[in-house]
Length: 221
Image 1 (tube, rainbow, N blue to C red):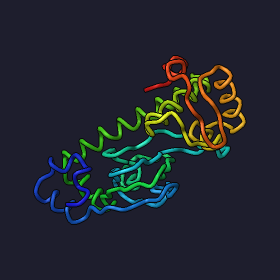
Image 2 (image 1 turned 90 degrees about the horizontal axis):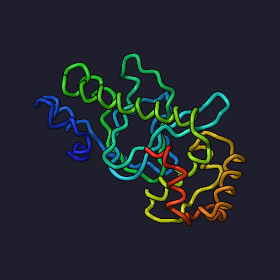
Image 3 (image 1 turned 135 degrees about the horizontal axis):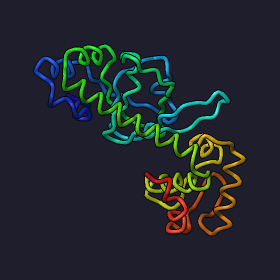
C-alpha cells in the first residue's frame, strides 16, 4: 500500500476500488526542474509525498507564471487531465525541488471516474479548488501591483524555507510572477531602498518582515 495514504479518497472506495488502487499506485522520485506533466504526456493522478511541485502556464510571449504550488499531501489533478472530459487547461507541472510523488496511473484514474461516486465527488471538489487558485492568481496579475506580488512571493519563499535568506535569482522570480527580469531587478532594488530586504548574488535576505507583510497583505492568500 505504498503511497496510497496520500490519496484521501481511498478509504471511501468499495473493496474493488481499493484493490485496484493497491495494485496500481506507485512512488517515483523527480529531480528539481524535472517535468511531471508537460501538457501532453498523461502521467495520472499525482500526490506529493515529499517536496514541492509547481503548476504554471506559459503566455504566447513565452513568459511563465506560477498558478499554485503543491506540497506534501497535496494532489495534482492536471497530470491526469487527458482522462477528464471538457478539461483543456494548458498547465505544466514540474518539481520545484527534489520531490517524491505517488501516482495513480491514468487508466486506473479513468476507471475509478466511471465506477466510483465517491471518487468522482472528490475529483469535482479538487477541480473546483484548483480553479479557485487559478482565478485568484489571475486577479492578482490583473489588479495588484508587482511590488505587492513580489513582496508576497518573498514571504512565501521564506516561510517554505523557514529562514530569512532566500536563494533565488532575478530570472527565477520573474518566471514565478510572470514578468520580465528587468522588472524584478527594479522592484528588488526598490524594496532594498525601503529597508525591507537586502540583495546579494543569487539570494535575497528579508530584513523587515513586518514592513514586507504590510506591503504584501493584499496579495497573501
